[in-house]
Amino acid sequence: YNGLTRVVEGPAAWIFTFVVIPLLILIVALLPPFNALQKLDFLKYTRISAAGGALNDPDGTIVSFPSEGVDSAFFASLNSVPMADFQRSAAGSDTYDAARNMPNTLIPRSPLYQLRSRGTEPNQVQMRIPIPNESKPYETLSVYNWNGSGWEYLPSTVLEAEDVIEANLSAMP
Image (cartoon, rainbow, N blue to C red; front, side, top):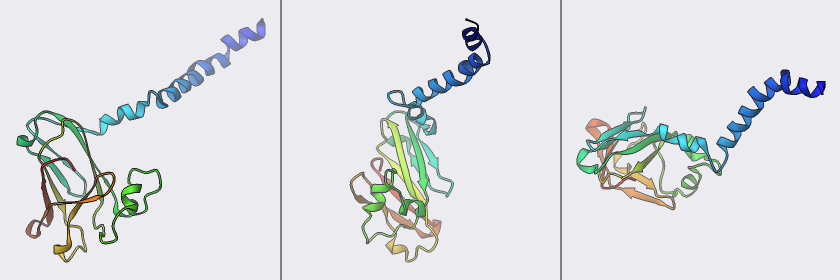
């Protein structure tokens, strides 16, 4: 009786109460079917109102959503994967299939931009991507989108005076 009382009321009980139980609760919350981290993923998104809005990447890339192309508020995120990291994507990563299926005729010059949305997608998107260094001749620059199964060309214009490539799209890439 004394030994059991010491375990239930002694230092072992404190460890069990304040370490083991919270650790078990945390593990259960992170594993399926709860996936707490996946549910918290929305914190990485920016709310774009019906008045429009924009997302900025630290390299100067801007993705704008004009008000006339936004029917209702939605959430969007812009992430960039450095070119070197993209080209050596490991199996199981988000970019592995895109990197492995890039045609030999395409030579990436900028990071891979990942644009994601939640909610009603806009029907107008404007992208302004700074022209990467060592990208001459500019006539060879284009913007491509990985659609999950292949690369597709996106109409774009090189604006040399502004040192950007601009793409005006009628849907989220």
